[in-house]
Image (cartoon, rainbow over all chains, first blue to last red; front, top):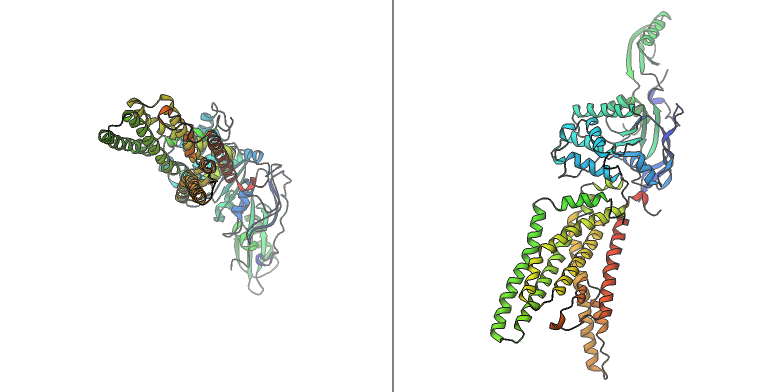
Length: 301
Length: 283
């Protein structure tokens, strides 16, 4: 039995499956003048996961991603990406793909020329580039737009082009900062499918978003940040899928964590068998939204 | 050499610099202004020669036209280069395209040198397109071909230095307009400032010399000050028998060359430091 709002916040912890860390943050702080963007963040993101990075605006999500991408230097603490300290920028940049929230695309170029330039900038050999670019365009479903001017693409297409740019160096870790912002429902679904596909290929993905329901569908882990502090890091499979609230005729309501319909049926049968006067059984998810509310409780009211 | 060879920025920027209406318009303006100046100067010179019927009138016409076209081209470059290169890095910041570049395996110096080379290459084309205008004094006679070639080389050197200064200024800004205006001010200060300071130094020395006997007049200090201007590179231009020989002096030419090299190198290094992602700074 639980009381969601009474639960203590879970302490950050290492991944439960014992997998090697893709990104390891150790006591990471980032201070801009007097503004503390990140405060002593310590967490290991396991390799192969899809980690949802959630938190209110200004919580420090983009700062955390920028540090992992070698764009920012932490004020304190250490960060390693697949064992490489971020000070070794060349090694880290070789294994990281980063798609910032602002796409930053050149205009006046065709899609294929744009990707060719970035492939060249990542030292991809000239004879390998056409095949690589064709593969990426197929992956992000922009094959029909290869000769189109970047400026003529829709927001969703630009997002996918930025994603292709982030994948041009065949990264082991893909950092996506608010990738779904400004996208229509179809584009969001397509983006989600691409992320799932990439994860299936073994790419570790860290994705920040405000749309918790979407993150829940694609993420194996959730990292919650609030006011620069790590509020929680959870494996989304660790807890039962739902919370059942049972109200009684003659007793206070109770909450139970259960895993599936069969368990819920068994619970109801047991309570009735015990002679308790069950009035109703309602189901709440314990998904990302509920966890986020619990972990950030007191700040969101 | 790695900064130049296999530098994707060079190819990328060249392609952007040399395409579109703006590229053609830029070349048109850069040729039109000196061309107009030559026509006006020629008309005035011929009229003057008719009036005074000087002995060396034909030779003087060539020198005057060459001086006119070179001054006009230099002035055009001073105005044109900041507009061309001043926004090179600032516009990347404004459009937020610099971050993706910083994340690639390109070194900051490659980014800066790539942009400088692309800007300079365009400026070389501009200068080359102005060749027919510059050749007019030679065709009129009285100006040796080596003088015309030296003028072209000096113009190219000035263009490269001003481009380096503009790229450096650009690396400090997040908005291209501010960068271009500041680069323009810097270019003007760099080209005219030393001459103004040198002039003031001469005036003050003349004033002191008039009051003292024997006069401590020494124009070398003023010459060396003026030599710090990129335009002092014209001291390398040999006008042959038709003008005062060695107007800047060998020490002045040395200072001018050293300043050109120093300013250009420092600007490239400075801009590279500004293009480095914050995570790499102070390491």
